[in-house]
Amino acid sequence: MADAEPLIRDQLVEALTKGIKPRDQWRIGAEHEKFGFHLNDLTRPAYDGQGSIHEMLEGLTRFGWSRVYEGEHVIALERANSDGMTASISLEPGGQFELSGAPLKDVHEICDETGRHLMEVKQVADQIGLGFLGLGFDPLWRRDQIPIMPKGRYDIMRAYMPKRGTLGLDMMLRTCTIQSNLDFDSEADMVLKFRTSLALQPIATALFANSPFTEGQPNGFLSARANVWTDTDPDRTGMLDFVFQDGFGFERYVDYALDVPMYFAKRDGHYVDLSGQSFRAFMSEGLDALPGDRANAKDWADHLTTLFPEVRLKSYLEMRGADGGPWSRICALQALWAGVL
Image 1: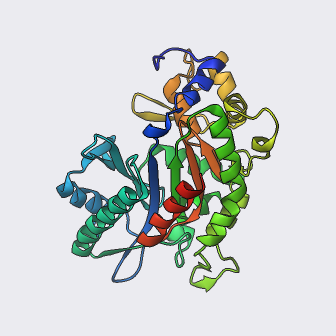
Image 2: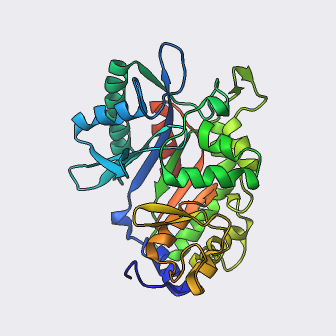
């Protein structure tokens, strides 16, 4: 399916079914975010300048990471392992540092990858006066004290978020999570795993809760990060009751995703603001912001990344309900979900 071809619904379903893999090809993918801060005054680092996010990214290239650009800015790093599987380091809106790990065979490989990454980050951070903290919510700083990263999609999201909830900007700027990504071998297997992980997600949230402070004071929550998701955007968050209904499968998830308003489309390296508009309309008749254009396969893949339920389906299942944490908890979450599923 070429990116330039207009889409039909069956192709959207097909894109999800391509995730089906035999058991001997199953992998585990771990993602985790962490807050950077200046050791001298505890402030969050800006993108540019001394002790900055850009310095962190440049420093990590000594370990074999390659730069990924958006315009003139380095906004991510990539590195392939010995099996040819690629990991990436990317930036969340407030400069939260994220490792999106390579798909790996077992929890032991995940733990090795995580430990290596944290060791590399610490070596660079020590040299430029930064520290990193694994928590679910920034314990100290206000929204307006947090620098914004130079990524076009985040500008669109920051403008749209306050229209849909009161805590969306907190989600973008002041939260960190650990995520587990797991495979399935059939549609029936996907459904069973989706239902199981969604039903157990509140338990994972409770087990890994570690964000009880906001702006230096107790906030009344064990997980302020989890509370943020209750008032971020009702169109794209939550527990997805329809997953438990008879007949749930790839097609029903596609229909759900089609009904979630868009954020953007990327054209010629730039993000076009399509916030609040219909992906269905983008497929069928197009949108005024992109005259003569129609949604393509890349647009669909991007759109799926803008859905934020507690469990998310792409070509694999993502468990999204845990606060950020230290090395041991990053490893433990993968063991929990791999063991259950």
